Length: 62
Image 1 (cartoon, rainbow, N blue to C red):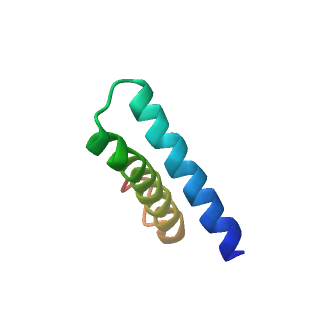
Image 2 (image 1 turned 90 degrees about the vertical axis):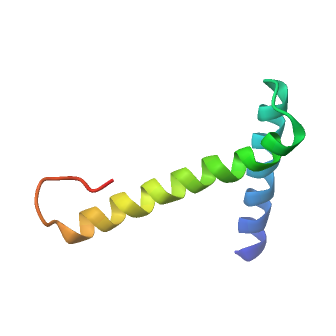
């Protein structure tokens, strides 16, 4: 399972970096771009998951 996760993380990072390069990003920006995108997706997922567990009302916290 760990090997699959590491392989998926590597493939995702490499694809995001190549995508950023293709559209004109410099080396530094292209290197951090995948981390920013994946970090935002992870944060949104955790916030939505926590909100659904709490159910403190109809207002979303994310």
